[in-house]
Image 1: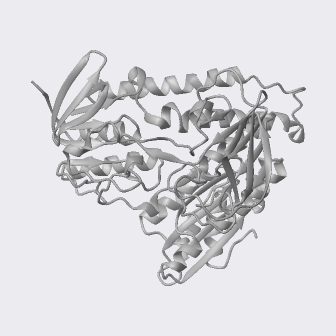
Image 2: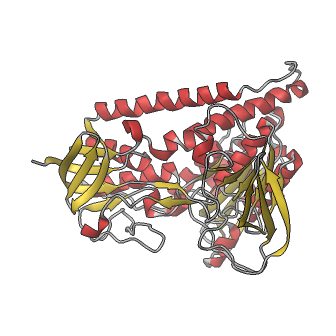
Image 3: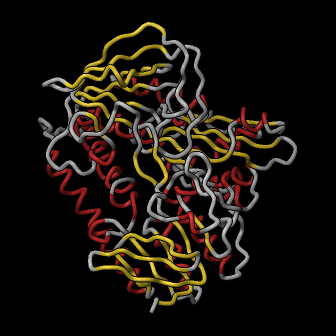
Length: 495
């Protein structure tokens, strides 16, 4: 006889375990199905994405600081980098957080099944485990099966010379002395920055005419300059020829050329924006051969739905494999919801968790606020950091707004000078008519933390004037937000 639950969640990433906890808080009986080996919850973010990558990026930042400590009066002698120890610490962080999530499941009385979940009927789920099969029945189902790394034909991953982000965060022994990073979305630029601080020779190849192409154009320009000043080679408007890939004893060779007249739609998600099915087909201009020990393919991600047996439901997928939902996460099948990467939008862990909470609150009749993509903070942890939300000036104008905009530099902020990170800026876009905030865009120290102030201000329909009226502690990096807000009104103090 099938086990009965109010809610069955398929997938244990942020879009699964977080709403499972919220559903339990709302009084539901909850089962969660996770197919990852070992039953590790937390999804890509905890096991292969956000957490292990940021652990390595923190090591890279410390390495940079140690090598430049003399500027601050700190002499440490010759700095040595121990990659196996960095990898060990990375795993310690991941393991501790895994245990924490498992503890949360027990505390909130969520029943966890380790296996592959698939639909038998819209309200009946089969779980294939190592010990056999079990059936679950539920009033509601939440699909949160996430995404996986994708590549281009001819650039299939081998884990050594053609690598993915997954390969990097599971390598405990070594890193390449030279690398080509294909794609300059968040994943591409984060690993490019990390590898360069490790001492790797890095070349970034981007199909579009600027790196981090989903960000404000001035952010792209500023990050390009920072990268090039550090010695990272950046090739934009450049395409690779996957068929030219040659694996050698020392690494790989591959042909690149100008992207010609082809066009490509901007990619979704946090991966890259290099290519795939939308890659240009125009004639290439010129060409050269790049050589490196490895090529990191960071061209984006694909949804994971193949195990679900969705044909027995009315759940609809678009031509990219994205599950179609409304603003509350409802699919075309009554009682079946979806959240996270599998529904498109911004493929970010915090967005997934928020979408999942909205879905379960809607199931419970809590009347939640619908998902607003303009409130999703987009954060990239390269050096310098990049963060944004909402509309750029150009996007706002395209939507018919009369726009006012400010840009305040970090070099006018005392704390940024103190910390030796004076480059970058904070930008606010506002509606001239209503004074409401439309978006914020930043590059510089700790902007991945600072952006939250703006997201909250937009959530409560705050204005730049109100942010400017808010006292920001001195000296602090947060002063850049207040000064940028005052600059929208034409009266910044320190610039």
